[in-house]
Amino acid sequence: RYAEVAQAAPIEVFAVVKAFTEDTHEKKVNLSIGAYRTDECKPWVLPVVRETESAMAADTTLNHEYLPILGLESFSTAAMKMVLGEDSAAIKDGRATAIQTLSGTGGLRVAADTLFRVLKYNTFYYSDPTWGNHRMIFLHAGFTEAKQYRYWDGESRGLDLVGMLEDLGNAPANSVILLHACAHNPTGVDPTHDQWKQIAEVIEAKQLLPLFDTAYQGFASGDLDRDAWPVRYFADRGFELMITQSFAKNFGLYNERVGNLVIIIKDPSLVVAVRSQVTLLVRGSYSNPPNHGARIVSTVLNNPKLFEDWRECIRIMSSRITAMREGLRERLEKLGTPGVWDHITSQIGMFSYSGLSAAQVKYLVDKFHVYLLSSGRINICGLTTKNIDYVAEAIYDTVCN
Ligand code: LMR
Image (tube, rainbow, N blue to C red):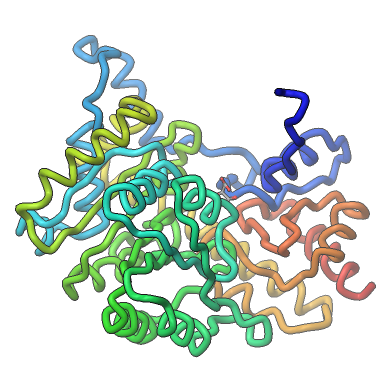
């Protein structure tokens, strides 16, 4: 049977990382996968994470016993409070419940499994464009109706609000609407508060189910409350909703797979039954989640001093990104690069949808060894004070050719 197996296409973002790693050119630059780099172009283990890990290693009361199927409770509760806020009515009323997951991706998969198998949803909508994995996660969970709503307006390099509202308005009732809480991946374009209100109105009127993918809380703006505003707005408006959280970016815990799924249900008496069904889904999939990363996050979120230290780390990361955005725009404009470049600073978070075409990306890779996704998405974190001139000049040359 193996002889009949067709070779699948590689996953682009990991294929680009591999090509970059194998490239021996001294000026090569990686602007592809969404991972933070210091100005020395190095991965950053946050000092507060190092400190917590050291304390954990020395703590002989800790061990490697199994966690419960739904994970480390001190972690998932703290993470839920982080996204919904300490004063969340949904938490106080017992309408919100949380489950530790295998990062944001695992949270999305558990959400999709629950939606499809337990709650019998079958249609989901995702933004055009969206993160490359969203569609596959839902299809693999069993959803058969995968639809897109308009999001990116190539002309204005901003949000196509009219198209988005129209597409959501035409979605059949009981469709799941996948939304990015902040720092939309790949565009870096987020709705304003007023636009979120209009989006919420359509979702409510059409009886759709919102699901927020929250992968950048705190990392986007440096402010946890600001980045969680849309999620809290929807929760306070009384929606039933799901929220997935990733701690890859904001804690730098990429390979520890630390995530959380929050479910808000109108009737709190139904929470126990829903958790029991999620328990079966997790048990039949990976049985129970790993401890290490979740314990780090739990320790930090539940300790006021460590929490403050961590907030300083996210401010450092988000300010470096803002500085790199400003630096790139300034250089492109100074060089007289054809086109308009103000979107680089108006977009938020790790990514910028540059507007470069697939052919231009190929040119950048081939001639300058500057690696990015064929969609033109730039990981701004890959820029440093040492390579930013080179990248700006490479983009200038590319656009002029
Ligand atoms: C990205 O978008 O580059 C990251 O979220 C990594 C991934 O898994 O795609």
